[in-house]
Length: 253
Image (cartoon, rainbow, N blue to C red; front, side):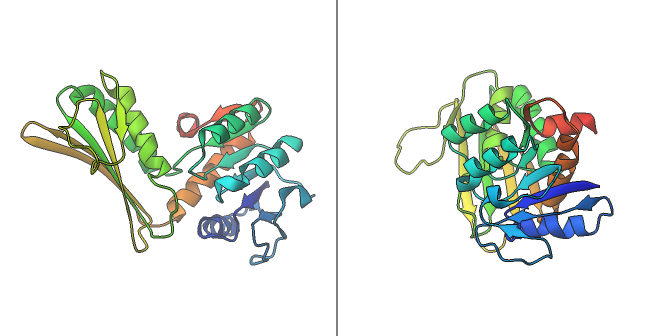
């Protein structure tokens, strides 16, 4: 039986994880963490991770970057692997994650969707083939409650494009204050927020007389919750400390 603690258990994504786990015979949620510790699903909920004394195999976090330090302290103290699905970490927090990964296995991804991670491989290949003569623009759309922009997935896609290009890259997040023609090195990243859009990401390669677009649309939060549970199964079986990602999971599958 795989025991999973869900951080952010009362949020939209946390509830998706809880709902999917409830349909699995080999998964149990012994506890949850949430800023407001209301009990919604029959397991105890704690606002402070260190108050939790229960046993678990792995932790899944779908909460807020502000919770990172407390979560890492909890997981390191208990030698517990974790899956970090939250986006919007600062450079300092990324360094904090890297330091913790020297002690425990940590799975970190800005997007838990299998389709999005396949998309990243495709855009890297497209950039390698088209990069010298095509301009690249990335557009992401999300619901009106999402607070970070651009999305972590948009930045991951930009990194994938940059890795495939034969030249250096510069990320451009706005153009209204700059009056100059577009430079070859630019990767434009634009964000839209509205309604209940779960998540849409589009990478456009615009060249002479043709446009090539790769797009992914998430139709349900269950896409990300399912990926997080798969990541939890994977990282719970990893014995060596380190920072792992979706490439490791896909390779294992």
